Image (cartoon, rainbow, N blue to C red; front, side, top):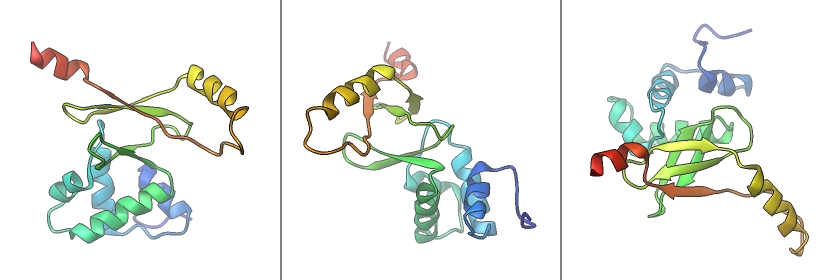
Length: 144
C-alpha cells in the first residue's frame, strides 16, 4: 500500500519500495532533482530548495544514489555530478566540460572490449564506469 505522500515520482517510489518514508523534504528534493534533465551537483540542488539544510540535501542525494535511481559521475576536476538514471539499464555518460550537461549512451563496442580484456586480467571484472568528456552542441554553437 502506498503512503499518502506517494506520487508518480520514480525517485520517491524507489525509496518507498525499499522501506524508506517519503517525507515532505524528500519530496521537495526529488522535485528539484527531476527538474534537472542535464544533470546536477549537490550544491545546485541546495540552491533550489531554500529552507532545506545542506546536510539534508546531501543525505537525500546519497539515498537516491544508493537505491540506484540517480547516477554519480566525476567531473574532470574530481567534483561529483549526478543525473537521474533514465532506465536502469547499464549505460555510460558524456559530460560537457563547458556547461556540465550529462547525456547517457550505450555502446556495444565497449562491452565487447571489456569481454576481451577479461581474458587478460588476473581475476573477474565485476563492473566498470565510463565518462567521456565532451563539448556539447549548445556550447559549441555559443562559441561561434
